[in-house]
Amino acid sequence: MARSLDGLVLAPVADQAPGQVGTRTRFAYHEENGRIWATYEGGDVVQGHLVGTRFGDRLDFRYVQLKTDGTTSSGHCVSVVSESSDGRVRLDETWEWESQTGSGTSVVEEITCPLDRHDR
Image (cartoon, rainbow, N blue to C red; front, side, top):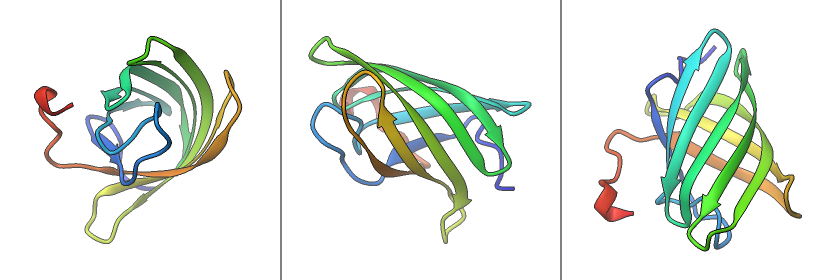
């Protein structure tokens, strides 16, 4: 099993469609006894939350977010935890909106120097 997500900051490696998470979004993860949760913001996301479970290297969680245009959206995601070639945590995600149509895949990786609030 890959190391704990607790205290890690992760970011997408590529931008998604407008109004969704992107390379300027930062996820602050927490993990305890098989539970995971995170807050996230940046780019088009003013505030987001996710909560779910971890079993081995598989995460299963729901997310909800408030965007800069004032709309909210929610969905479900399953991720596989691994390590990149340089030892950083990587999540390969498969997600689906529940509040609107759409689904896809994305990759987020551990970052070592989160963006300053002024860069968002």
